[in-house]
Length: 187
Image 1 (tube, rainbow, N blue to C red):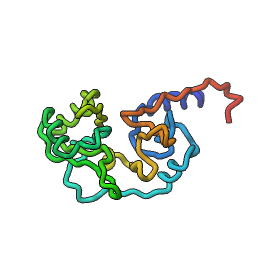
Image 2 (spheres, rainbow, N blue to C red; image 1 turned 60 degrees about the vertical axis):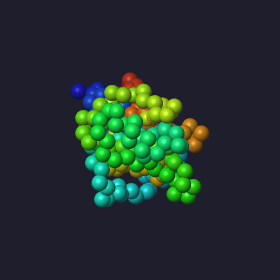
Image 3 (cartoon, one colour; image 1 turned 90 degrees about the horizontal axis):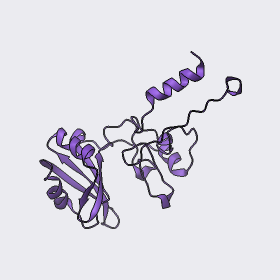
Image 4 (tube, rainbow, N blue to C red; image 1 turned 135 degrees about the vertical axis):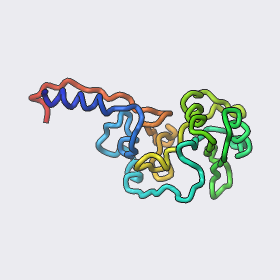
């Protein structure tokens, strides 16, 4: 088998629209094939060290990441909303340490992994108090190499900030183009 066919076959076998292991350079890329950082956030994520928090009581396999809800939503609102889909063990809303305002994201731990999976994978259009929310699994403690957005990582950002990230449920990788370059023109 020629090198190009072998490489194309490997690419098809290992390629996924979702990251399996977190690499800031790949997450900062539309198709996961970049070889050079394109902005300072990617460089910051590459150079930063992150250890997931120890001692958390929630189980990451059944913990959901919930974002894009309104600033008035609190942990009781999250619990009331997600209780419709199964038993909720705990909820947490993340607040800015300086201003004390909601960062409009948080975490919900379900009693059952099946309930968490059903919510994350089968209910894409959930509305909480007038806001279309984004729900996915927590990856901070489950994905090797994960870096949070505050360190330049994450899977998503705002276009205005220049931090577009890919590889997650919200912004999956685009399938890379595999060009048929004649053998004599390669490396």
